[in-house]
Image 1 (spheres, rainbow, N blue to C red):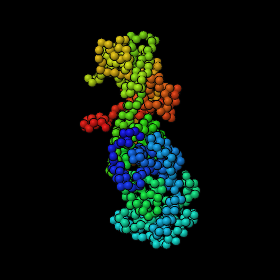
Image 2: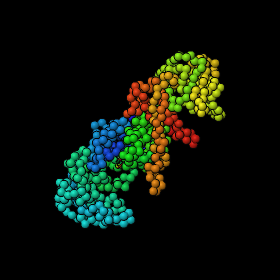
Image 3: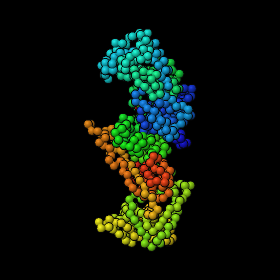
Image 4: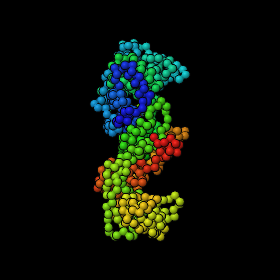
Length: 568
Ligand code: ATP
Ligand code: MG
């Protein structure tokens, strides 16, 4: 994390923490955590939570824990655990030696449950889920007590131990916190805190057949680790009284405080784990790291830098109101970072031949060009130039409209870092498609400048045809065609709004240096966009495979300029 990030302006969470510190709470300590459930891959919403929790710990000189919230044995998997570790590390959040599993605290949690039973604050209930729902009441009606509510602590303790010993089948009994069946908050109406699940757990194997439920487990996990501020998303606000009740009614080593913020929702994509899993399982995308996915591993594969994601998370900030963030802002952050850091390269996506009639046959020149105009320390490299070149078909028009400044019959343009050329004729095939554009060049303009101060309006990129390397380019676009996927009409299926144009694979040409670049290498293809050698499929020395990370056009910056708000 950089100086800037640490010194970011305070948000409401930082104000709360600063207030707690001023009051001398927690002995002046700040401990935060990121507690993913290992039942899926992390997405950009999780990244927001990671940056917030880690950034907060760093800001206050505190500690940041990484904890697998693995209390549900059925849906969790070590594949997910490994991916989470990789992603959190890649984002730059450092948990040092504090990597924990909620399942490591099962014994302690079980002990706290017995404590509640002994204190008359929990009971074993034999009602099925359905039966309990019928007595639980509604938002407007209070609930009625379970017939098992007044079991004695002795009886409850005996039954709970027998639940643990495996005497009862799944669903036969639950342990409930004995709170208040007429509470206006439905979560306080004797919530279940332990259930029976005869299932193997990825960490504890078959040791347990009773598992704590989230609302009971989460505050205890925080308390056991000495977390001071438990930052979570807004939908848990209504669970906070229960969080506090658990913390107050068991004798935990520390008393964490829950603070809620609005989750990140991003336009043109989905963030629900269920939907992401469906996209992967049913083959709508090519796996969790398909570059169209909003997952952290997909952004990495696509060529996005962790810095760009951190910048984005900082700019969106934290609020108490759910809203939809424009994906164009994320794309803007991605470009902004890549523009500073990416080396430039020449690539031609849709080639047409340009032949320089007065250039000596068989001659090859090595022309020097800058690696990154934004960063002089990136140096220069040489690219081969010869008589027959490829340029973009789009960069030539036979009959150009007024505002077209690129190549046209009789017109002179600059070939980037090379020469001025003037179009003298075109050759077409029988169906009228241009096959060759013939030009003459001015040898005095070597390097792309004219000694007589002559100006040209257009500069285009090119490749020497004999030296260009054939490559595969995967052009990615937004995954959905609708801005707010959660707001699609009643009865419609979100899958119907998948963008059929979200992935296009095209053959293109790149400069020879790219044949040898490493997987994951990032380049700005001049005038086209930001690309990254695919970390999985690109092999140095073989036909290069590039993912388009982002096109050059920045719709966010343009919109901001139009509305006079200025780029962020
Ligand atoms: P579920 O609980 O439905 O499996 P989840 O997205 O909440 O899904 P978790 O693994 O529980 O997944 O999330 C880990 C942490 O990330 C939680 O603290 C959660 O609040 C936070 N988080 C999840 N989604 C977002 C989001 N879109 N924006 C910000 N934080 C999020
Ligand atoms: Mg969750």
